[in-house]
Structures are given as C-alpha cells and as structure tokens.
Length: 401
Image (cartoon, rainbow, N blue to C red; front, side, top):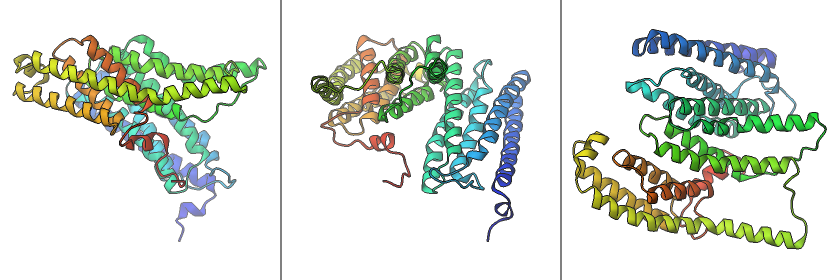
C-alpha cells in the first residue's frame, strides 16, 4: 500500500520532501549553534551560524531547481521520492554547509579543533555511500548527478580555503579548488566565441586523482599534521592534479588531438607501456629508501624523551619501535605490491609523525613524492594484491559488477 505522499503528483511529493530537508537543515544549524555557543566564543558561534546558513540556502536552492530532474537515466517519468542515494547526498550538502561555517574564523582549540576535519571526512564518506545506495536501489537520477557535482565543488572549495586559512597549505593551493570552475568558465567562453569544444573521452585518471586530492585534504584539516610537511605534501599532491586538468583542457580545446598515423600511435603505445611499468620501479625505489630510513630512525632515536614530549606518549622507546616496525611493514607491502596505495597512506602518516620530532630529511621528502606517485598511479604490474583499485576504478553497487 502506497503512503499518502506517494499518491500525490510526483512534483508535489518532491516539494514536500524538499520542505523536510529545510527542517532538517534548520535543526542542524540550531544544534550546531547551540554547541558552539557552549564550547566556543558566542561571537564566533553567531558568525558560524550566519555563514553556514548562507551555504544551506544555496544548497537548498540547488536542490529546489533540481527536483524536476529526478528521473532515472533513459526514462522520462518523474520519480516521487528522493531515494536513499539522493537523501544521503542532501545530508552531505548539510555537512558541507557546516564546514563552510568555519571559514573566516580562527581554528578552534581543544576537541573542537577536530570539527572541520571530521565534517569533511563525513562528507567524503557520504559521497561514496550516496552513489552506492542510488545504484543498488536503482534510483540513480539526473538530479543526483547535479547535486553531486554542485556539492563536490563546494566541499572542495571550502576545505581548500580552510586549509589555507589555517596555514596548513600555501595560498597557491587554491588553484586546486578553483580548477573545475576555471575549466567550466573556459568551456563557456569558447562556446560564446564560437570555438569548437571537444568531448572528453572517459578516463579512470580523473576519478583516482580527485579521490587522492580529497584524501589529502582530510589529513591537513586534522589538528595533527603541520608545516613544513603539509606544504611539501601540498606541492607533491597538487601538481599532478593540476596537470591532469591541463591535459583535459588541451583535449577540450583541440590542442591535444588523438594520434592517427602508425608511427605516433606506436610512440603512444610505448609511452603507455612506460607509464604502466613506472609504478613497479617507484615502489622498488621506495622500499630501498625505507630500509635506509629505518636504519636512521633507530640510530637517531634510540629512546628519546623529546619524542615522548612531542607525541604525548609516556613511553618513548615503545613509540620508536612501533614506528620502526610500521615502516618495515610498509616496505614489505610495497615490495609485494599488496595494498600498495593503502601502504603509501600509512607511509605518509608515519613520516608526519617523525616530522613532529625532527626536520624532514631529503630521503623523507623523496619518499613523500614516491608515496604520492603510488597513490596516483597505483602499484603497476607484478603486484600481489590491489583491492583499492576496485574502489577507485569501479563504482560500488554498479549492477555490471
């Protein structure tokens, strides 16, 4: 038996659900403001409410304008409900609005310092879940695509602005946040001038690069990592991302055309072969450098009280040995090509912990670059186990799986 809203015209039912989203947004703002009033300065809480409220209004406006596109791909009938996936996307938008509320405010202290990073992390997890839920429930719609793109762009912009504001990354890192906007503006200008705009071919590169960039922002918004480590990491992670956008722009503008002759195609195949095997060489080099890094770690930090003070660990020797063993595990996993991307993330975290007690060495900086390359490119051939590739290159819940 259908519920009362389902017997209403689809658009009326969707507007009712939009009104429920308004109420949920208002409740989120009220609870957030009340909590910040107790845990922070009342003036800061009021500014958070104003800024988060403005973001909520924008997101609700996008949702309202998207209601008429709540149609499955390949169909014409308007669906009467949001579905689990779009509901999760709306929830993600509310979290991003909460994140935006911290802009132009000082980084909170105490446990509240974790709030921006936790909000962005929760939004990122819901970004994975909304697509999964939409596919497994057969409720993937054009409305979901519109909301997803809008909320992703706003979330990336807010997170990057906060990272710059908190001094975690340099100002130029904002190019990462505005890259998509500049790309779309460039396409619009070409169309206005009557210039050709080529279609972008499908590419798994974009999904992997965007995921890595979001993962980087998760870390720098946590009150654990600090410059110069985060500045170096920002450069290493941002440059490939921006180059990826540049390649896409060259394709769209027709300055990078597909090769048709036999000889250029042969060169392209050779280049693809090199890129395919490059990660295998990179993880081998990383394993060698980690070996030297472990030796230096135990040589320079045999049982340090300074490490204990920096890391807040009462028994420094235990921390030294735990970090050393963790580095050894990363080395083994990289050599085997087992969960290489996950191992690279662990390696980056370990380097950040070491940076808390001593300056980064050239070997450690090189390892940061190698770990970033593995995150972007994967582990290549001769890899034992690559479960993360399934998460990156295949959409969870896809019926083709």
